[in-house]
Amino acid sequence: MKALLFAAGLVAAAGALTSSAQAQNYPWCAVYGGRGGGGQNCGFSTFEQCMATLSGMGGFCNRNTQFVPPPGPHRRYRRYE
Image (cartoon, rainbow, N blue to C red; front, side, top):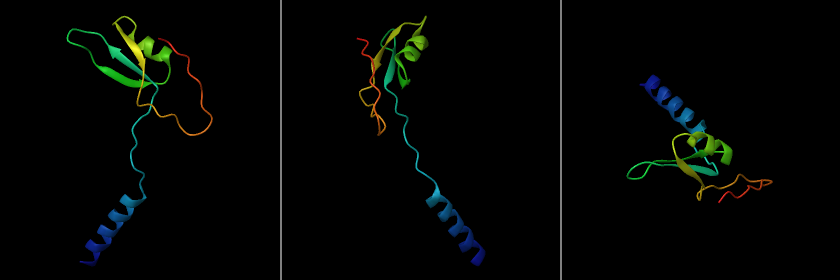
């Protein structure tokens, strides 16, 4: 019984020490073309990276409206619209 309580305590302590998962936060979204609409991927750091991914398959890149820049000095992004 003591071993079971000790093991449960270790599991609880290990769970308390881990950091929580956070969502990725990127400023550009690729909107894929296609019949009936396409998918969207908001995992791009730069406009160029987004456009390179869409190269040859169609679609367009938009700014991610859910993007929250990290604290500190902010980098200005060029507007491509």
